[in-house]
Length: 549
Image (cartoon, rainbow, N blue to C red):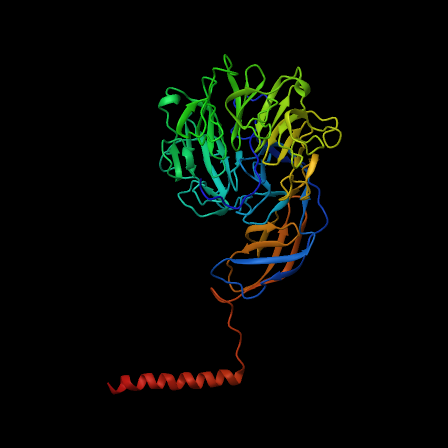
């Protein structure tokens, strides 16, 4: 097993309700409601404010009042990923928004500061002019599929999971390499795992990159790759085209055109579902269909850490892999199952057809035909959402007396120790662990019942003398940081403006000195005279030898 980066919380994917083809992560894409102007922002201090470089951009910090502006947000897509403590969504404006843990820049806003409310992903670089079609969150990295049908990633990159032929982290989006396996290939889906990333291309084949421990890239190798490589299509996938891909912590799974599931990578808990344990596979293997799945075709697949679940044509759920907390939902806590088992349908799910399935770290959730959520497995931080911290090996109903009162749910996503759902009013609600602000409710307190995701944090446009600054970030304490552009010698006004109409201009805010450095201050006349005398003697001394030569 590879050494792990800083442990953060995990979340995983679920899928759009009644979708004909499922995306590899649950996407609750977001749109902003019509924002209203908040209190007028004011800048009181700027540092540095003198001697800025005329040759290179300069990081600047500003403080004042009401620099943190919020706008209401309503979601239609959201992504949670493998072992992730952050969430991301897509707005109707085509932009991406993220919140929660930001240790390695996985929020994509040019910062490494956590945020308990949504912040905008940077669009001044690789994503300039692009709108986002799909977003996927991994452990401490995030990837998106843009309107140009290419992939862009940001965050942690020690194993090449950003796919840009590098192992350097990036707090802003970078383009995934398209020179090799993806040359000429538009992309259709993207999935972010723990330390790897996968995508489905227009040729209906899978491509993966990043960490390849246990062979989770599926290319019959265990060598990491900083650029996309093709998943093997001989063997189990011979003649198959793929229609969904999901990435877990140490394994990857896909749903093929034959409506069967295929998995590859780590298998220490039987998460590949091929009636084997402790035998990883660097190439795809077929999930067993001789038992619970006999005669069944699959409609959706979901995975996270070491267990996998699927929704079958009978509208019931089946799971396999790790089960020590009852996350397989079969009224058992047997350590694991290497083949699919049926989730219990008596009790809370009695008579309920299922519409979606979402696999969390050690718990699982589903959305039923009554448009309500049901969860099972570990409940140590309230991730089952039933107002309790008691584990359950069978489905229990998520509480609907508070934030979800009177609401029908449309989508659900299960994370590491937390869960989120999309209600009919377009608002996202979350519950469970919240140490990094991943519930998005402007808090870091856990909740055993659903709480609404907060308004989005607006990132202002910052200009210096009319020229745009970059890497603009507003911290939760209201501190504004940005990178000021290089400007000619002079003094310039600083202007900030928000999409809710709030704006402020500080005249004569930034003074630029000589190129590349702080301007040299004027010398006292006496010192200037002495300097001239010294320079004169020096010039005479150098000229003398030349005249005698």
